[in-house]
Image 1 (cartoon, one colour):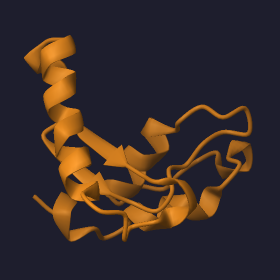
Image 2: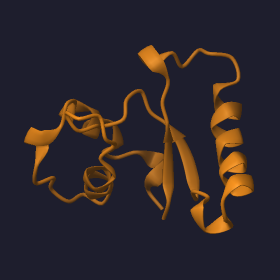
Image 3: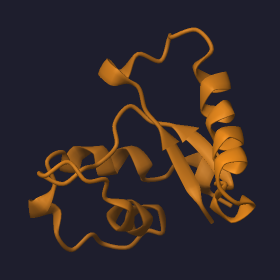
Image 4: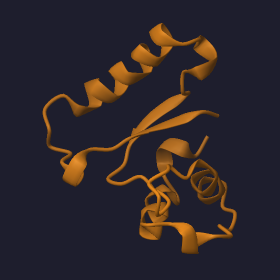
Length: 93
């Protein structure tokens, strides 16, 4: 399952229309690429785990979502962000 994360700077979830903008992102992906790249779900989180060099860590997020252990948290700039994905109801099915 492809999951796209939608985060805001400073965790501002009260921004007007944030859910619409996250949904709009999937439409933009569909129009600019192929339907294969469109995520099955777009969810809001307050932070996205990144390496110390700033790259998004998709494999570690996948491991947390599937209840697996993450092997290399030492390379993460914000390992606490992984806990945001543990037990999310939106990802249960």
